[in-house]
Amino acid sequence: MKTTLGDRIVRSELYKSIFRHGYTGSRRNRYLTLLTNFFLHLHPLETPGGALRFSYTWGLGGITFLLFCLLTVTGVLLMFYYVPDSRRAYDDTKDLEFVVPFGLFLRNLHRWAGHAMVITVWLHMLRVFLTGSYKKPRQFNWAVGVILLVTTLLLSFSGYLLPWDQIAFWAITVGTNMATATPFLGAEGPFSFVTYENDMRFLILGGRFVGQNALLRFYVLHCLALPLIAAVFIGVHFWRVRKDRFSVPLDPGGEKISAAKIDVWPHLVSREFLAMIVTILLLVGWSLVVDAPLEEIANPNNTPNPAKAPWYFLGLQEMLVYFDPWIAGVMLPLMIVAGLVMIPYLDPNPGGVGIYGYRHRVYTISVFLLGFFMWVILIFMGQFFRGPGWGWYWPWETWVVPKPIYAKTWDFPGPLGLAALLMFFGIGIYSPRKLKPKLFAGLSTGKYVTIMILLLSMIALPVKILLRLIFDVHYVWVTPWFKI
Ligand code: HEM
Image 1 (tube, rainbow, N blue to C red):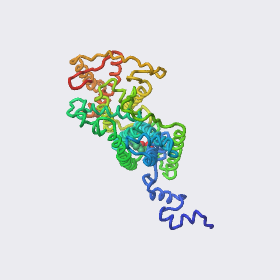
Image 2: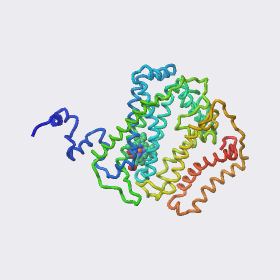
Image 3: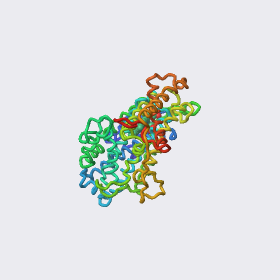
Image 4: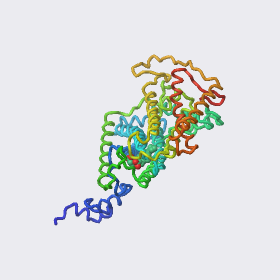
């Protein structure tokens, strides 16, 4: 038989010293390809066929990982041209636009991949939730996922400051101002025992205001600390996906959709490559057409009105209209993160894994979607309907003549407010179990009360919005230490 060039390469000492397998034509060699390749060896050898359905995972976890890798590569390249010195950071960013070959394209890729990762990580979480894939034995991996979600948001937030333009400066000023409202540890928070010189905001900024120290801190966090944390947890996340096995999609009748095992090489690996190519093409196309914004240089003496936080934190900023900063900026985000981590441990229903649809999990899915869409709506309100003085402006209304701020609000008298709150939480916790005992069967009292407190806190948001919009109520309960 004639020896081809390919045969000679595969049999050469150099090839064999790197790859421990021949052509991927035989099953043995395909397995060896996965087992002896550093990048591929995280994969199992076989997987249930149904798990590869695109319409099950939408490739969202893999795409999020790809974006993380792209961000690392483009971020390292950007580091060659950027110095975190407040006197030259803006000029370095401008130079990327006008001096560095392909600098603008590089910056665009990095910026848009960052935004895309924030979106895909949320969507990936939504798909994992909707298919019940967080249930036993994957509870812990869901919690690892929540850490990754928070790390992704912090990565994006810390990068926001680096261009040192007006958007960057004021978005970070608004975002970090909320930290002064931290209970106990914020200078303006309830039960504060600290000053502006040693509170939470000072810790984050390295000073009272956004300046050189803040830029250096955000740079180190963005380029080193947070990517390292993300890389470690992504490693743990993937390892657990392997150990816990991938959830298998079921058809709505409960039958497993092709549980028969198929080889991961080539079936999964080729799909991953396809998703990778499509994502990269879309991102490159977008980065060629749309430029990352860069306003004029940061000016601490010129506050834009309105000064908006980055879009993914606009939900929190919008909540500031209805709640005090310690609730909107600190307690509610903490409760959201804690609530997300606890979902697998609080959900007593083992059913519905692998199925999109309400049938097996009507209440859990409804509550989650309510929270998810409330969050999206708040972001939309903050992004598109808020103008000067955080007033409500329809997209077709001009900002040139600011509207008068309508501030005629009133508070519930103290005892009445306390009674209203006690009734809201008391009745809210007591009655559901009394009225529908079957629904909560199998839940310990501790778990039941935790679920109801989280749920009622979530419902409190639209209730407070309606109280404000319809009855002009500002606070429900006013005490000398805090206001709710
Ligand atoms: C940097 C962020 C993340 C990356 C790179 C990532 C990556 C992945 C990948 C590649 C998978 C395999 C299947 C798939 O593509 O769906 C996966 C599965 C999973 N992820 Fe993530 N993920 C991230 C964040 C999250 C978040 C925020 C959550 C939930 C809060 C989460 C929970 C899970 C769970 C429970 C599974 C197993 C799903 C199953 O077996 O069906 N992940 N993740």
